[in-house]
Length: 320
Image 1 (cartoon, rainbow, N blue to C red):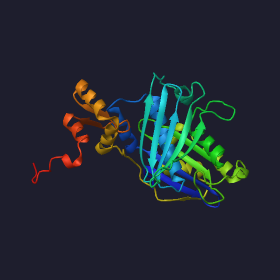
Image 2 (cartoon, rainbow, N blue to C red):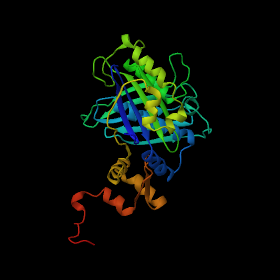
Image 3 (cartoon, helix red, strand yellow):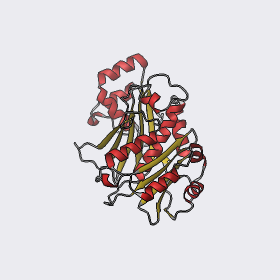
Image 4 (cartoon, one colour):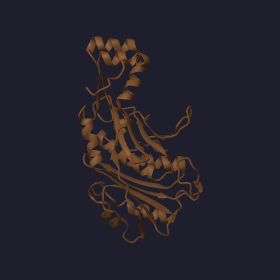
């Protein structure tokens, strides 16, 4: 079972569950695709990797059919960072940078320079009824004493503690080759195991097994999380524990953009605005922020967008 992907496990005799995620080829593909239209600064790339790993770990611990979306809304040079993980563990991520970023900038310097940065956790159900809104929880990028949080893992831990009343320990790390994370979580006594599913504040902080295992997890360094394979990592941390492991789940980079979706967006802009772009640039160009794929529309394409289907010429009867 020593392969990249998502590895879930339980501690036998303890009401504690865990997961390890290692994104390698998929994460490298995501960065390579994005670099084709403009590479993000190093701290932003690493933050997006940590957010993606966190999304994988959170998706693994809930019963939910849809997309789990993590959004950092910043008040600094990083205006927005987004990581989306779907039920099948496909992912994509992007960001919007509006100013220069120092090479060693941490979370507060990126997105919380005035103390107004926040993180939103969104659950967008695949079969959400028309007119209903996705579940959304929001947490600031500072603790209860308003001290800025410098690690994205601390933001998620703070959210789970304050909003869900579930003891959670999360370790995250990313570079340009690997995005990785480790999650430990006290299992809800209700058995629901879902975001926004019950309040268990009387148990927070008093679970001896979780506290012990959390201390062991805390000995893991960032370099070890990036370098160690899953078997070695779990053995090094929990060699005295009885760990029940499950079959690993494959993860992959996947963007849901497409020419049809882009066309619908352009129709929403209206024909006059598109005609102005055609006059100025000769064609309409749209690039996907997630995967870097470029979509091009010429004058004929734009005309067809606003031509009723009944007026379209018939398709040829033979291949051209």
